[in-house]
Amino acid sequence: QVQLVESGGGLVQSGGSLRLSCASSGRTFTVHNVAWFRQAPGKEREFVAASTWSGGSTRYADSVKGRFTISRDNAKNRVYLQMNSLKPEDTAVYYCAAERTDSLPVLPSSWGYWGQGTQVTVSS
Image (tube, rainbow, N blue to C red; front, top):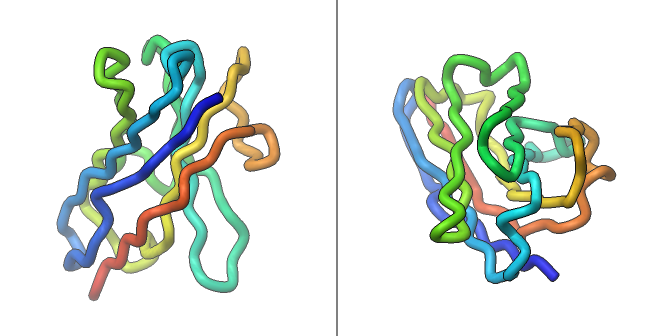
């Protein structure tokens, strides 16, 4: 069983930065691939970034490529999302997800474990 708790969200001006953190209490977290998704009001949940369990392979949505970086510290059972050059369209609730999978899928239905989400608001 993997339990995920996100933190680090908040209000930031356009062009600013935030670092989201996702903490896991599961003993098998280190062998799970992890991902970040986001959901804006009235929109479907969308893929943001993902990393393999080792951190050796990552995947990003085109909309965040070059601005966001996913990383993980398995010794601390944590996953991070560094968000730079934030835009108002990045405003959403951000969710951490995990799954034992051989790939980095972009569909939310492919990920079995989810956190409760953290709000990110970017003002113009």
